[in-house]
Length: 153
Image 1 (cartoon, rainbow, N blue to C red):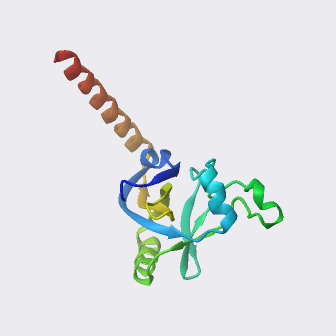
Image 2: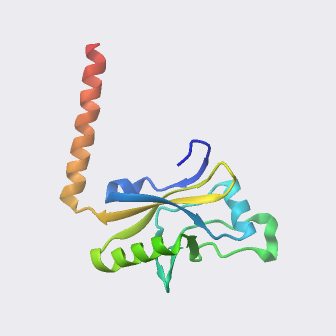
């Protein structure tokens, strides 16, 4: 990702619940009222995931609120939204979805430096409860270690 972007929504829980194997920057097909609502903020991708819809990949259960100025031309707040990928990328991801039992989870939703809405999509595998405990323990240890070194200096 570039440094010149404006984050609209972030899924911080995904890093806790999943092992992130790979990330992709993908486009998303939105209507005008959705883009304007995103510019206002208030969107949520915590419960969202991406899945196959026919021979395409769609972002499912992402919440983009209605835009007040669009009145009757407004959009559905939780409709499936098509993700824009190259055909080779789609085929590769669909193959992995069927064989390996992976999940596609959005990590963030943002405007890039050209003003286009992008999704940082992660290819993930679920963590077990003991994996989550181990991650928590390691994070606490690193925090305590940093505090000790800070006090020592």
